[in-house]
Amino acid sequence: MAALPKVLTTDNLESILQSYKSQGKKIVFTNGCFDLLHVGHVRYLEQAKSLADILIVGINTDRSVQILKGPTRPIQNENDRAEILASLKSVDHTVLFDDETPLQLIKKVKPDFLVKGGDWEVPQIVGSDFVLSYGGQVKSLQFINGRSTTLIVEKSKN
Image (cartoon, rainbow, N blue to C red):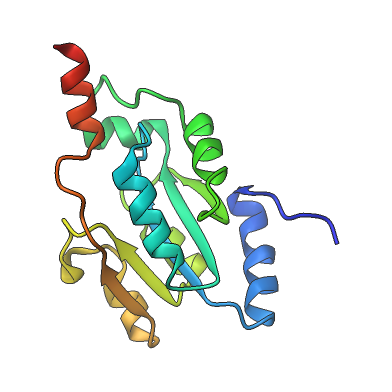
């Protein structure tokens, strides 16, 4: 069997998800900008992966990062961010999304686990109501204080 692509499109996402679900694989989903990869991201993604068989990471497109973070972001383009994250052993697949929130992508993935970093309370996590409605779990994972892309950018300016 040919290896599945690590960087997915919304076009091939559905067939890959069907394959995993038919095999009884559990899926965890998270999302973010992941502009500059740092140790907080790595630890968080490893913890997310430990919850299930397959980790899918939704990545904000460049346009949506600018809306969230301002006109000087992202630092790295969306395709580079998707490929860099997909190269991590904890990440099975990445997929870009252009909406303001990942809700439509979460509805397509229908994960067994929806996770975000510990700076998010479960009720604040976009898609939590949807995932809980069919018996999925929503978790706020450990947050690593002092590790963020914003702090790296600020430090680089000094």
